Amino acid sequence: MSGLAFRLGRALAPVPRTLVPKVLFAHVVAEVAARCASPAEVNRELHRLGIGAGDIVAVTQATLTLLNRAWPPDGDPRRVAEFSKLVFPDAWLALGDREPEARVEVAEGGLVWVELGEGPGGDALYKIATPEGVNPLYFAAGVLEGCAQVILGAVGSGWFSFWRPLGQAGVCGFLSSSARPAEEVARAVGARAPNFFRDVSWEDSAKALDEVLGARVPQAPKRAT
Image (cartoon, rainbow, N blue to C red):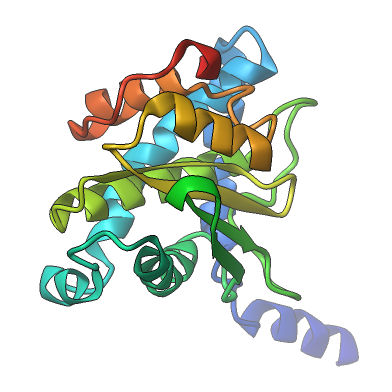
């Protein structure tokens, strides 16, 4: 009887919210890895796929009216940082089942730097086994990048945003005015995260955002590619 009760308990236990997404994502990663020549190429393709999913995440955010109210018309970086604190932790919930640990600050020259780390005890769809050198968080970073660009375009901000993995436990990204010289932006990003453009370059992001979302960002400086 105790054995039957155990099996019934397992059968009736609630299925984790991330189980099905993780299984599907693992299948996608395996297919991408099978057709790519290197881990870096896999990471670039995962990032690109994430950008497409970011469009879907963006439409689940607050209404455009509320986003317009939250966005600072003067583009004050301090207020853009406050906007980021409202928007991007919510976008992260499309990937995991816990609120992230968010850190947002204004860096050199008005660059807004955002870090989203895993909250304690949570699970996420990207937590799967991958080949050496493949970081599934490139998909998560792509989701945030696509989501950010759709929202920034919708509010008419004149800003753009790139995102990359934060090691193996989160993502990091920046928001910058498109009017700022790309060389200055790349220099400021490099000072914060020297390997930010290692596997996915500025040009990779610009090309994917254009082809997948029709979103234009400033042309890459040579040093960022």
